[in-house]
Image (cartoon, rainbow, N blue to C red; front, side, top):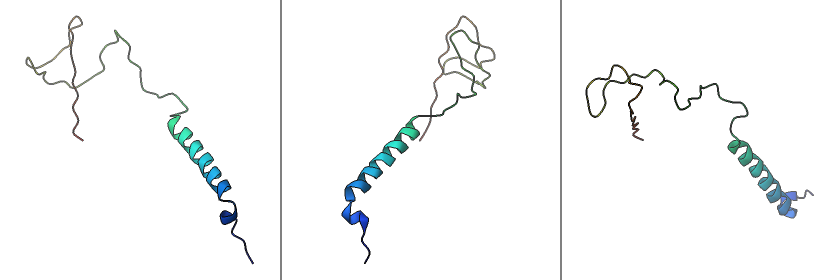
Length: 78
């Protein structure tokens, strides 16, 4: 005669599942364990190379002036 331990001890199974889910959630939210290789930009750094053809107001853009403010707006359709 075999006895199903899950029917006798359902609390232990639920407790183990809670512990496992907590560990999985913690690992998934912890992020990468090593820093990204991407460069970090700071205020005053030169603009990275971009392909800018035109702005909303004005014509073609060939160079970016240092003492002028530029606003970049990115769009995405999901």
